[in-house]
Length: 163
Image (cartoon, rainbow, N blue to C red; front, side, top):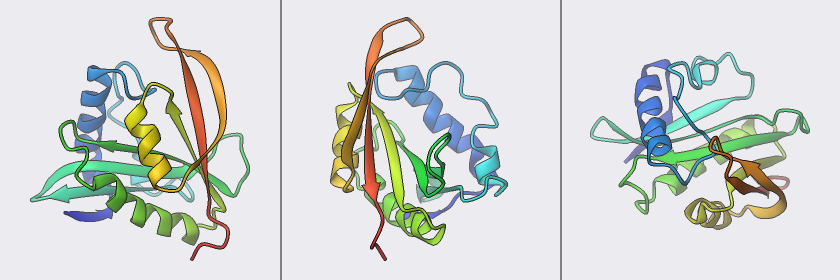
C-alpha cells in the first residue's frame, strides 16, 4: 500500500469511494449525491492549509483522508474526515493515512484536529479513538435527510508538543 498526497486526477476515485459509502448509508453524515467537484479546492491546492492523502494499491484507490481549517473555529484547528473503500476497512488504511495527515497538520501549524462522527458509526468512533482523539462534546439529534435524529460526537486530538 502506498500513501501519497492526492491530486486533481484522484477526484473521480475519491467521489466514487464516498458515493458508495453514502449509498450504503449508516456511517457518514454525507447524504445524497456527492458532487463531482467534492474536495476540488483541497486537491488543487487552493484551500490554504488543506490537504488530502490517498492510499492505493496496484493503482486502485483504497481510501482517502483530508484536513482543512475548521469552519467557524480556532485558526489553529483542522477538521478531518476519513473514508475507506467498502470492503477495505480493517486493513490498516486509516492508520497509514493518518501518519501522513498528522505530519501535514503539524507542518501547517495546526495545534489540534477535530473529528465529528455520527454516534451510530461505531467503527469511526473506534478508529479516531485509536488515533488518539478524545471525546470533546456531543451535538444531540442532528436530523438525517429523512428526519431521523442522530447525535454527532466531536473528538479532538491535541497536537501541541507533537513533532
